[in-house]
Image 1 (cartoon, rainbow, N blue to C red):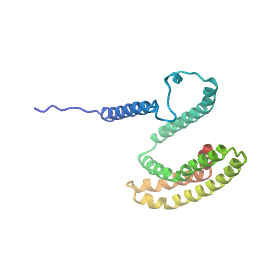
Image 2 (image 1 turned 135 degrees about the horizontal axis):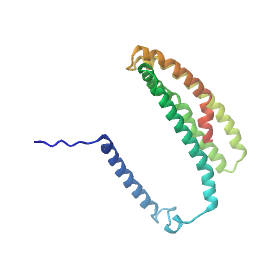
Image 3 (image 1 turned 120 degrees about the horizontal axis):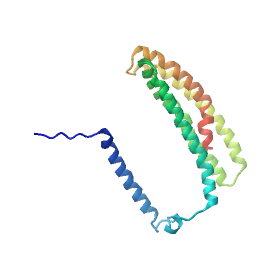
Image 4 (image 1 turned 135 degrees about the vertical axis):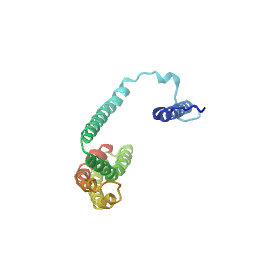
Length: 197
C-alpha cells in the first residue's frame, strides 16, 4: 500500500551541500562584479595574462600544495596502519586523537599572531622589526606550547576516565598521548606556527 523510498546516505548529504555551495558561489561572484565596491572585477581582466604575477603565485602555491599532499599521504598511511590494530588499540587511538586535537590548540592559536605581527611590520616597511618579533614569538610559542601540552597530559587520565571505552583501551591511551605531547610541545611550534610568520 505504501511505497518505500530508498534514500542513500550519499545523496541525502551531497545534494543539499552541492546546491548551497553553488548558490553561494554564484552570489559572491555576482557581488564581486558590483561597481559599487571600491575593488571589483572587470570582465576584460579575467582572461588577462600576467606572467610575473602568475610566477609569484605559483612560487608560493606549488610548495604549499606539495606539502599538503605529503601531509594527506602520511594521514592515509597512518590510517592504514591503525586499521591493522585490534579493537582495544583502535578505540585507544580514537580517544588519543581527540586529546591530540586539544593539545595542538596552542600552536594553532599562535599561528594568526605570527601572521598579524610580522605582516604589520612588513606593511610598515620596518625590515628589522620582523626578525626581533619572530624570535620573540618563537620563544613565547615554545614556552606556551610546552606548558599547554604538559597540562593536557596531566588531565588526560580525567578525560580517559569519562570515555566510553573498555579498561584495556583506557590503559593504552596514556602512551600515545605522552609521545604526541612531547613532540607536539617541542616540534609543532616550529612546524606549524613558524610557517605563518
